[in-house]
Amino acid sequence: MKNLIKEEWKKSLSTNTNYVLLDVRSPQECQAGMQENASQLNFLDQDVFMNGIENLDNTKDYFVYCRSGARSSNACAILTQKGFTTFNLLGGMLEWDGKVV
Image 1 (cartoon, rainbow, N blue to C red):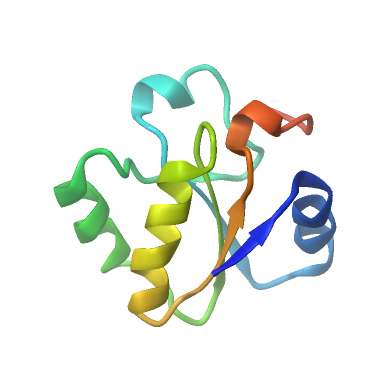
Image 2: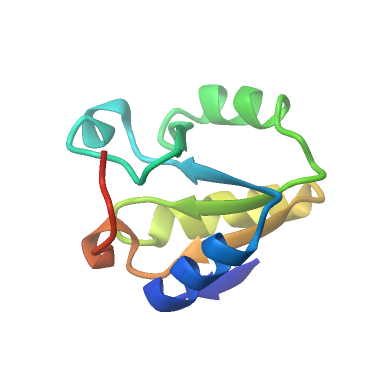
């Protein structure tokens, strides 16, 4: 897992062509807006999360974010243990100033 500040995150997303953007917040939190092209996988529901990661493509890089960066850090740790390449957004959506859909 690599932790990225928002500037590094934006640059990495603009240069990486083989990634998945993963929002690990709850569905209720996501209703307030998500980063463009993100998929949602609720980390708070461990059954949903663990079942969901079984369907992920391990040939892709995973850029993972949450509200503040704590859940996404934990999600990245699990994904990394399973062989995925992960990047965590430090500060999460609280620090994000990019496009939200």
